[in-house]
Picture 1 (cartoon, helix red, strand yellow):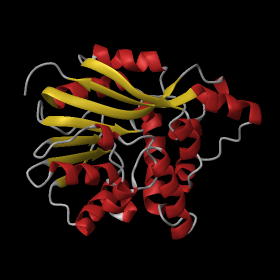
Picture 2 (cartoon, rainbow, N blue to C red):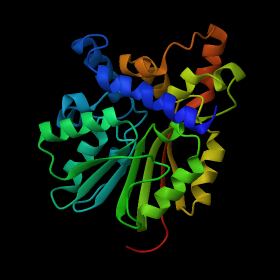
Picture 3 (tube, rainbow, N blue to C red):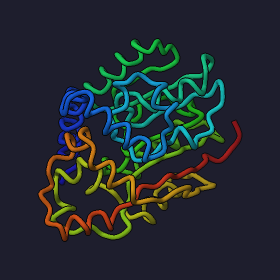
Picture 4 (tube, rainbow, N blue to C red):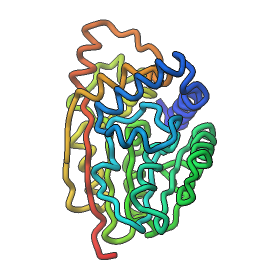
Length: 274
């Protein structure tokens, strides 16, 4: 699949999620599923209560804000910010003297996130429409970059980590929760548009993913966590299904899919001093 086609399909699918979140299965059913998924991937009850309800659509595969050790006054950038959930959690941690920037390529998600920011009274958060391969952010202007199950959706991961390196200040850090492959996917899954949208077909082999980060210039690279369980949970939520679409896999290929994918938390630092 060509890069432009991937972006078009992903944008359309997540626009649909943004429009329908909270309605596809009824508000109570939707929120219950989202809450269960969020707890399974590392969010606390306090996290879930802290942000505007509509900000969390259950589309993540980890909790990068929990491992970022954010400090007051820091500038944080969220790649693929969606409804703004991680941005709002980060905003509480960096305080009024800090700042959080969310970047997303889907206009409907930006609209939703801005509405959530207004609803929650967040003055230190802003959302920018743009692609994470070409970040609308100045050089060396950010202390911390987070991302939650988004980089796997993009075809040019090398470019994304080069951009991440560019906008971080020396000594800045990146904390990413993402999907990776433990082994190659079956061909019919790898070539599936639905699987790509569902964070599956675009995933890289774990070792290759880590090498891309290092080649972008990052150091002190650490794999903080690896687990398969959140993948199965995330794929079962109403919002995720809205984006993924039915893959119509045989049981054999479904088992292969689960056996091939893991969610990971990765930490790395841009060399130098702030």
